[in-house]
Length: 259
Image 1 (cartoon, helix red, strand yellow):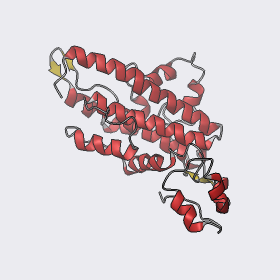
Image 2 (tube, helix red, strand yellow; image 1 turned 90 degrees about the horizontal axis):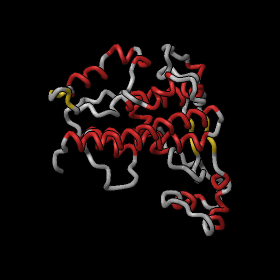
Image 3 (tube, one colour; image 1 turned 60 degrees about the vertical axis):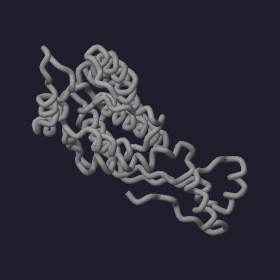
């Protein structure tokens, strides 16, 4: 792929800001609202959508195409980032990487065809994952006065002071930043509620501020002997059919992938 001109980079950056990063920010706020409303199945889907867009944005900001597929698994996108962007040593903690994999497994369950799990401290982990990933959602390869600012910018966003005080990090013209700064946004209350990463005054939450693990099992998993009937009218993913063929007519164990 040919090297982009500065003008072309500006066009691409503006597009990614509006169609990936801003939408991901809005989906993140929506996920927080769904959590507060205890709409957990919808929460998983919305959180997964948000993380997917942030990951794709990182690739595009680094001029890596994501046109080969309309959808990627989060783990595949993360691997693309690590394998393709060699001049950035990404500093994602293990719990952030594990949460990305967790949303891969749990976030595609739109029709409640398999059990879902809301892991302990979900909201805190979502906030942390968004913060760590979102720092890289900007065009750090631009130049100022003809000089690259790439190394300085990466050093700045990875500085230990920001890790210790995440509320001090700001993306230029970021949607979350706009919402935090202006009380005119009705959903500002949702963004800053119990949020130790996106709030003007940093606060570290206690474990008690978040949820315990929640597991919900769909009706088809409770009565697997009904699967043959229901599957004539409702599509089920290929991975589910062997499960019910094995347990047909028996009490069925939930399909839950270990985290």
